[in-house]
Image (cartoon, rainbow, N blue to C red):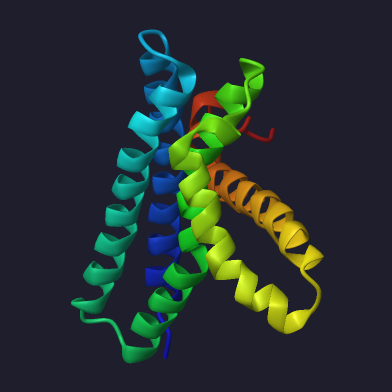
Length: 175
């Protein structure tokens, strides 16, 4: 049996971690770029942000593994963590990409971004070679970026929506 309540709680924590990683990296790269080159700022902030979100994801998985949840729930948490790890790591990277876009700079000169892209390519390349041609890797990378951004946006929206509703006030009473 799988505890949907536990999975929902972990997905909510994942969403908060995604938003936190994005916003902290955004603020960190932006602030650091005021004192140094944008690429140096990205190289300084991105490894720390990716380590932070990785530790957060790992902490959630470990908390689930040592909990009193059923084996099915623990396996589901591990499967979800494996599927959502790359989109979670993309959150801080996408913040640096956004800042580079706004600054009209090429993020490809960042060593941290390049290392992340190479790591993802090493993961996706064998899959794309097994499935089809080498051009598939480029399409897989583009798809990864879009899916990761969409997953992060909707998970953030799901987490933030109750807060927005509370800010707007209670629903008007029917007369």
